[in-house]
Image 1 (cartoon, rainbow, N blue to C red):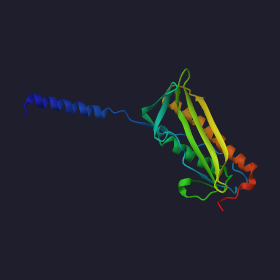
Image 2: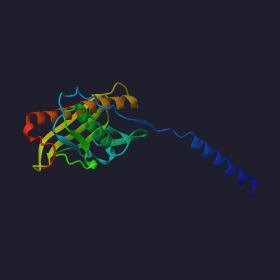
Image 3: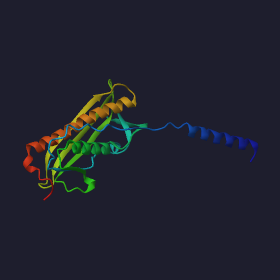
Image 4: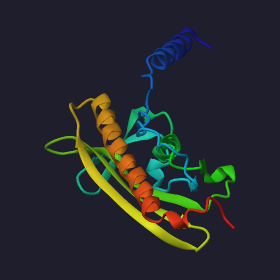
Length: 207
């Protein structure tokens, strides 16, 4: 190998090492756990099961998404969720319902619980929306399925945008966090109201 070729190869190798050393680190974000209301005075008799939350593929992954216009959705390359939004929502809802003290038990469907009532949900939107004002959009649907009767006995839809206090990714995450907290509390309150109105249906398990 002559000196000229060796010099070129060494230069390319040095450039490769330099490029590898300057890779931008990925920043990870998460949501705050919703604060449950004050515990009820007595433990409920209903056993709830929360199924996995459905959603489009982009929300079953970790990148933070943004929407431009009506049809274009992209993701940030170096900003990601700590875990997929659909999983964060399932875990947060389980924690919120469990800590309320209104139920005998609240478990995930994958845990094999035989609870009579199953909470099923779908996350449709969980992203930054760019426009005259930057907002965090959360859109989701939930239903309560009674295993005993084989019927859906309660449904709830939520779709709201929360203004972001800035254009940086931290402000977007904060807006989505506030929006989701409000939405999950609506869901929990709706489920609680259903059982308060239909207390005779609460048997605590499949018979």
